[in-house]
Length: 209
Image 1 (cartoon, rainbow, N blue to C red):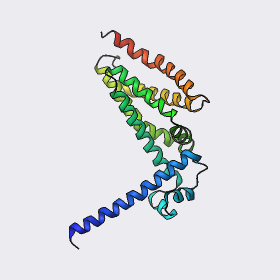
Image 2: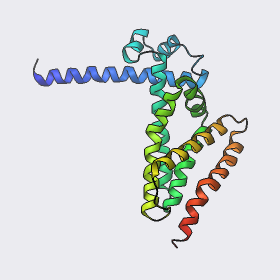
Image 3: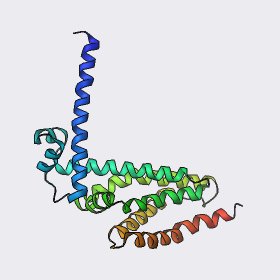
Image 4: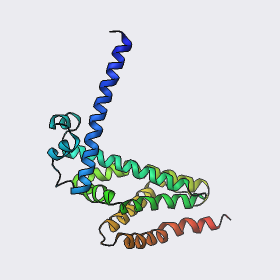
């Protein structure tokens, strides 16, 4: 067998491993959304995926590790929604607020609500906060730096402000997730976010016109 054939074989094996891992993640995500983390067993996941327990433990340490990866992927999907919302706005302050709103709106999706916002913190504890911070805080800082650069807000250290805004967004999402009427809760909490953050940004923006 020549080198090219060897490489082809290795790629095929890698693709098979990736497909197995993907099948486990997809099956787990479906079950976590349907039943919740605690009511879903590892056996159910491998059965849904059409695989064996050995396959699960080859790719993940345990069910919790699998759940952590599912949550991380869901956070990436929220990131994509945030970026799309930002691109839809022409003015920087409106783009920043649209991104914040997209994060809060993510909780209106039943799967996101149950798996990411409810089971996520319960199962992963502080690690869930670390996952969120890894995705969110840097991006919030970038937005604040852009607002400062364009004169919308006064120069200041962006790290503390980004953490405060991220904390407010998380609490807003939890408020919606805990409500029996998510849409009304979302409207109420977003009104508060507009007054807390949006008015501040837009007040400064009005002086630029």
